[in-house]
Length: 347
Image 1 (cartoon, helix red, strand yellow):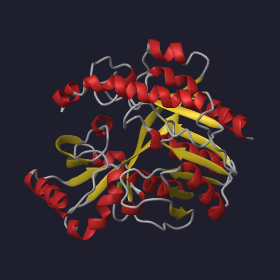
Image 2 (cartoon, rainbow, N blue to C red):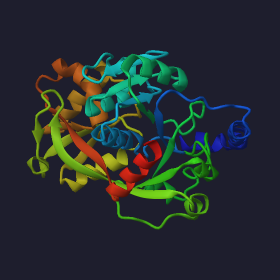
Image 3 (spheres, rainbow, N blue to C red):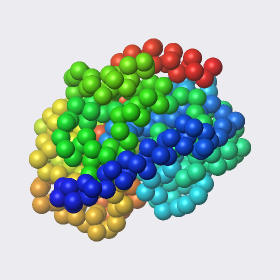
Image 4 (cartoon, rainbow, N blue to C red):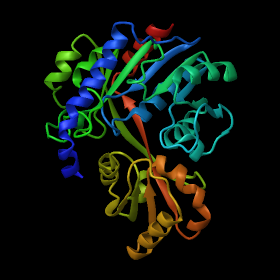
């Protein structure tokens, strides 16, 4: 994989040129952002996957809901098997299944219990969702690069581990590296969230200091709350799984943080099946998981919440295998400061 990315290195300047021209068109007003009849908060990043966008969307959505806002979440619906606008949830019941919506927005809709929809064109999706559900505040999931819709707040979340990793295949633009845009794009953000996940705080790299010096900077981190039976939704304490030998199953962009979280709960993580991000599970994968479970003599299967919403479709095939997901929540270090900043921009 790294060899292929190295071979594609000559295309990095081409990609950089296309991105820079596109951004220049927006800055000069040749491409125009369109407003919708609601307050709009965008959550995004400048890297490919694993920064914590969806956990931040969930945190932000719950915050706005608790403040009495009629909030809804709009996403592109990456990995879904449908096209165009699709209402995922009306806030009370799920309307679409995970294959129609995509795993991230499906997870968000269940967790937040707010209206949620998917649409590649965010202006079209926003207008339809506002008309259909009456929301007055839209949270856009993964929209930092989707500049066609005007936003009141642009939040940029950066994984601390990533921005402190100087390796060749990290700090490069696509298709060689993992960056969608270079660090100059940080200037577009209204606030930067440095996601420490499960790590201690590290000094900010020079690029963030340079381009984000006038920005509001907040720190977030992950906390594990409990293990949840994926089928029954019964919750179990972290201590109930200490020392337990489990088969770890993951299909997310950056399984490192998930595995690290499990290690901190003292779960035996030696047996793992790692799938690509946004994995679409079929009976082939289910049989692989079942085979791995019995071969390793594991007590249970432990997966992510994002994977769990897709695996429960095959609950009948797991009749003799218990599947749990580790519930992980994002927290802000300065909760009050973050809340005051958000409300000051939309009230």
